[in-house]
Length: 330
Image 1: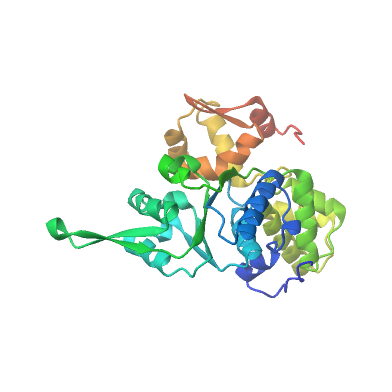
Image 2 (image 1 turned 180 degrees about the horizontal axis):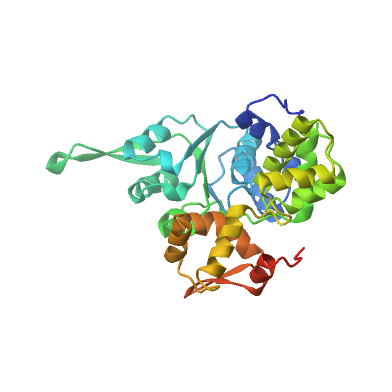
């Protein structure tokens, strides 16, 4: 059964949800991860229980949240979503866990943002299905063990190294890496999204959007929506010329790089002579946080081989210099 067409008048958040696949057949890419997860789900359904806890990691926008939704849909289970940054205290985590309905899929996005003490609170919850609550303080303090309803935790993170080893080991259902997408997979996603949005998108525009999508479905869908908006405002059908005009306005070039990416590369070349440049010095020159460079700018620049990370710092590669010099790199 295919997804219904999305209502283009929906708010942005609802529109994003409408474009999200609701069946495994609609989930493009990540074939090995998808196959492994489906086996785990089918095995759990045959046993009549919940699957073991699952952890997904990879760059932003490559489908981790969508996988959580598909897992819940496959199990016919309620989905409870939160994020690591939203769970600050033990009481917050205890309230979430003790109020779960039996058979819930609990999705914690950016799970690496959980405070380390809360990670430790999760250990018995994931391992034996109970929560240890400390009541009182000092010599009179006592620990109460609360039984939890059966649930499956699906964790997602862009920074797997920031999770402690003991927490990672509790994901008995597997830890799976989601990678960037191929051009063919992106084209399939773009065609599907355009169809759902009722957009007539020529194949040459599909190719252009795929090339500018930074190998990421979330970026691809965002560009599809922005191209639609531009076409509607200009009262002109989508064409290669119109897509080029829109891309220029958006500040996105043929490789999907933005003015901020180019500023990063320019700064590395001009201020640091191509490197090596320490991450903190580079971040200071760009007036950004080091974490922003590492997790927003650099993954795609590394994929394009425009920069390298060395023990001494960041280096601009010959391909990066060629890009800045205007060489054709497609």
